[in-house]
Image (cartoon, rainbow, N blue to C red; front, side, top):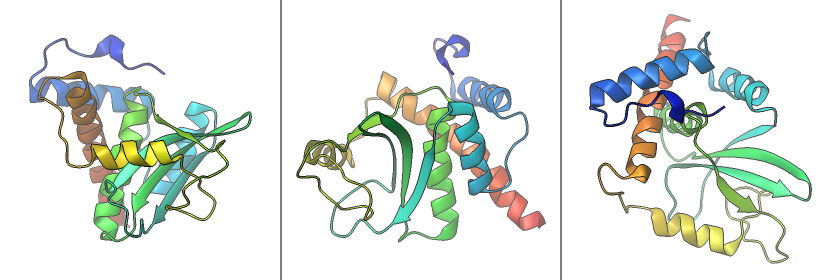
Length: 175
């Protein structure tokens, strides 16, 4: 599931939003009505388990959400983590942003669980490599330069996540 083949080379916000809409409809012809339905659908598309976790990060200064690839031996799964201290509305928006990365064909951050001294900070069953925690914490609050590949990646996930969140939150209003 690669996403770069349809991206406009130099995109305005309107061009990028149009690309995100097309990409979303290509990957998810029927939009999900809940985060759990989105998770299950993306598991089918990606061919592996996706763990959606909402926990309190304690005293760690982390972003409000992150997406990582967890390897434990030969097993690999995706982890979408969201800070539960935010409102249900904000948690939905943050989770949709992380799923937006998947839909746009981005690659996840690797999360190693093979080191013997893992930092257990996000959930009892999630072990993060200390270097990975440092990389995440080091990223917080450091925006990428406008137009850079990192900036573009985040903008794509923001726009795609916004479209998803609007649909999911609107589905709850109609229920």
